[in-house]
Length: 367
Image 1 (tube, helix red, strand yellow):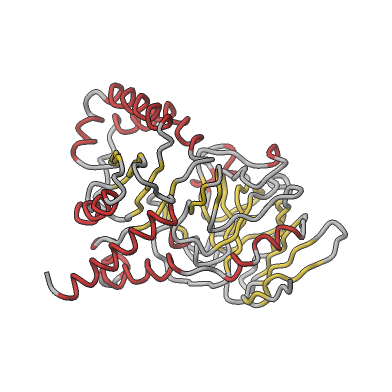
Image 2 (cartoon, rainbow, N blue to C red):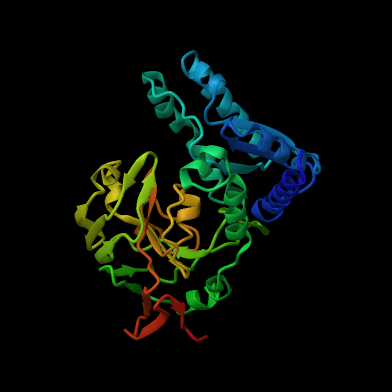
C-alpha cells in the first residue's frame, strides 16, 4: 500500500471514529446494526474494525447483492419473519443503527419478487418508529462509480465528504435563539422566482445537527449544515423554483417548479411522478435553512440537501413540535433544493413583524 493510500485510509478511519462518536454516541458493548450496500467491502471491514474497539455486537443488513437477490427469489417471507424477530431482540437491547449511503453501486435486479418483497417490508415499520426516538445516523461513503459519475477521483470525493461532515453551520449556533422567536411563518425569495410563505406550527423548534433522546446526544445525518423543522402542512403558499436538479431513486429532474395554495400543490412542472408516489406527497414535510449554496449536483441527497435551502415533499418530523396534527405524514420524503447565493429569508412573528434572517445568502439576523 502506497503512502498516499495509507494516508487516505487513516483519514477514513478518523472519519469512522467521528461517525461512531458523534453520530450514534457509541458506548462499550453496544448493539449496532449496519445497513449497507454489499459493494464496499474494504470500507465495511474498516468500519467493523473501528466498532470492535468498543466490543460492539454487530449485525449487518445488506440492501443489495447476490445473497439478498437469492433470498428475494426464494423464501423472502421467512427472511422477513426472521428480521422481525431479530429487531424485537435488538430493540430490547436498545440498539443503534449506522446507515451507509454510497450511490451508483450495482443495483438490485428489478424483478416481480423484488416488488413483492418491498411491499412486505411494512412489517418492519415498528423499527422506523423506534428510530424516531433512538440514536441512529446516516452517512456517505465514497466509491469509484460515484466518483466517476462526478468526474473526480475517489480521494477528491472523500475529501469533499470530510469537509462537509466536519463543518458546522453558523446557523447551528443560533438555532435555539431562532426557535425562541416563536415565528408563525418563514418567507423565502430568490432571483430565480421562488416566492414562498411557509407556515410554522405554534411553538415549533428548529432541529439541527445534534438531537437528544433520553439524555443521549447523537447526530441523525452526517453531514448536517442545515437547521430545519416541519411546516404546517396546510399553510404553505406561493412558488418554489429549483436552483439545482433533483436526483431521487433514479429520477433526474432539472428546472422544476411547484406552486402551493393552503399547503396543497396546485401547479407543478417536472415533478408529477414524485408527487404521485402517494396522496400526501402533495404537501410539504420539511423546510430547511442552509447558508451556503453549491450548484454542484452530488447525485446523493445526503450531500445535496446540505448545499442550499430546501423544502421536502412528504413525511415530516414530530420532533420539536407541539401541534403534531399539523405535520404531514408519508412513506416518502423528497428534498427539493431552491436556495441560491442571493436568497433572502425572513421570519414573521405573531405581531406580524418581519425579521430578516438571511439577506443575499448571508446571515444578517442579530441576536
